Length: 299
Ligand code: NAD
Image 1 (cartoon, rainbow, N blue to C red):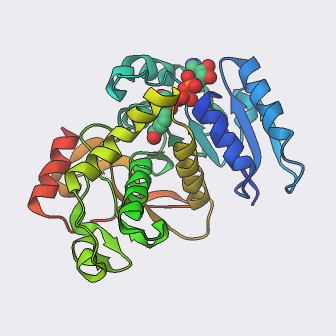
Image 2 (tube, helix red, strand yellow; image 1 turned 180 degrees about the vertical axis):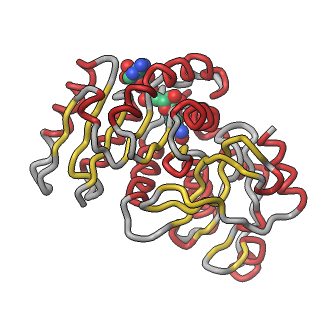
């Protein structure tokens, strides 16, 4: 593929996204921008020297003008959580950083699809939507794509079945009020609530599974200082959806416009995304209690 992807922020997440992209066939050009130019240069050198076994790819540490004609811009700049911190505690610092970079990057790449990763990702996506002046279809936050990946990982271990057979999602905020709409959780067409009857497997402890999903980020940060592999895989998957030939459904954070009675907030529910960016939310049948949980998360 011949897409050009710019990544702002060459920290743990941004540079791992660049590395993951460099080992796949999604981008032919990658631009890494960081306020710490030396860091971006070091990351680029380290990544580019591992690319001799693939088709040619351009990877540079650049400035905003180097981002022109980007197909996708990924925003990862800002501070990350320290052990014990919540994502919401990052808000003011990361919103200020976002406000400083937005005019520059939007001027350079007005037609790109923007993928927001910095936390708190739903708030950052909302702020970017409000200040960038770009059409909403060009803006999405990684939202609960990572949480949904963690859920699939947990369910796969519980049911001892490939993750690709599991269709289950985390909705709401990428944070402490996210929830699992179990009524939409299936293993290849069989509801998870019926699957264990067929296979003689212990029923899932649903509260424990939610805790596993919600607490994984904090646990990883407390053990190794940062999270970056799974989020990078999730973001690269999203990039591949954004440059592919058809639409796909993913749980990403986009502006709500009355869906489930929720308005003017960015949240993750099933969303149709593809080469033209965000095509809208896909309504999923949920119980009244699940809709209430989504509203609580929106609040
Ligand atoms: P990090 O501290 O390793 O890297 C952040 C980078 O941003 C640094 O290199 C810093 O120099 C750069 N930066 C700061 N201000 C800048 C500016 N004005 N312009 C350009 N670059 C600037 O942090 P990280 O671990 O890479 O995390 C980055 C963000 O991603 C955090 O907000 C973190 O919470 C978030 N994150 C999101 C998810 C998700 O699922 N959405 C998962 C993990 C981390």
